[in-house]
Length: 121
Image (cartoon, rainbow, N blue to C red; front, side, top):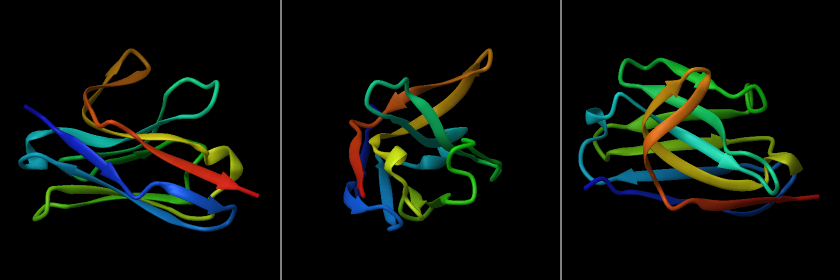
């Protein structure tokens, strides 16, 4: 059974930084693509960043240049470093594994429970 456990969310002011962590049960290398989605208030869930086994990275347009996805293979953890946070980054952030595309829409087979990130002015 796959378990993904997120941590690191919280309340920060605009312009500050946070780092989210996603600890997986077992090796993260068994997943082709891992990454992060988010769902803001009244919004649809969107892809924030994905990282493939071959180190191919995709970022959502809204976070390019500010967020960085990475992994620690020895610890089976995927990170999301979020810098220069904006009010519109407020959302529940979900770790995801086995990310794939259904047409143009990113989906995932496995999800964490989510961690809240709130950015205040």
